[in-house]
Length: 431
Image (cartoon, rainbow, N blue to C red; front, side):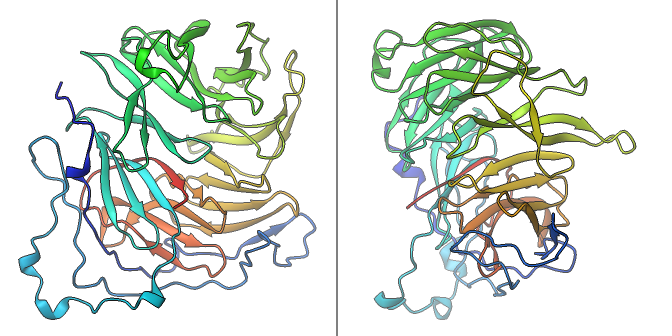
């Protein structure tokens, strides 16, 4: 194990400018495909600050000063190696932008890069940097953003073969280990609504049965007594996944094949809240913002003709989590991920080949992206004015990149220029 210094500034600072790409027909095309429950075909009212009435794409040649991110054989701590500046002629350097035309902040997208690092890319400027790593080949998983937008939580190497839960500041200069179990199997890292606690699953050896744990962020430097790390529920399960806090912080809901809940204070577990489908575990648990008793999940589903798998979106009213809950279906076929906007009205639905936008009030669907060849993992910007998704680079179809779509203009931009390396969990923070 190679330890890291508290500051990771030596691996930050790479700036890149990736050109906007024009989508070809059928591949990453923004489609105004409206499916109205009333059958009128009228354009849906998307967020009050957004009107998706026209579809446009921005086309530009990458600036001559742009540099691709290259991940090569490097010494620790790892860094991204830019193309040598000597290859860029002096005439290619653009003139400084006037102060009056400074690019407004559109927030920052954080993602797991190549399975062993956390990277950040500024959405407006496309400046990219590496903020957290434990070394090449040292896996980082389960990246999530605290509800207050101030901290990142993730699972990374601990002592020896152990995996632990960590939090870091958004610039990576502060890092704190939260858990201190010394277990080799750790997953989850789910935030409470007040950004003060984390919940996760952990087992003593890889792929072993896991139990459910919680801890407070404050006092983590004296774990387990200082941060009240404790086992909330002994599950001894190999199926447990997808833990989420109730908005009031009193219960944890999780999938153990089907959905259950547990009282955080007493450890009392509910009966099964969903029925066994026989096609796989319930997954992608999300509470709907503004509706604290409405839990959205994906019920495992299967296309028996093609063999394709995914889930269908259902909502559960969990106001009385002591009996089997009634389900209300939402649109979608074989879905892999859903995300609500901050006001709880709009839903992004990532399927195999498309990303759909669902207006729950007007009950209409807008297809935003089609022709996908990789799992889109679509997410909203904090203000729901834009969305980001993972797509394949038109210039390098084997490489994943992050694209951003403005929901007002329909403009789509590629904001990363990775030459290699995968993209894992993706979150979007303000500022």
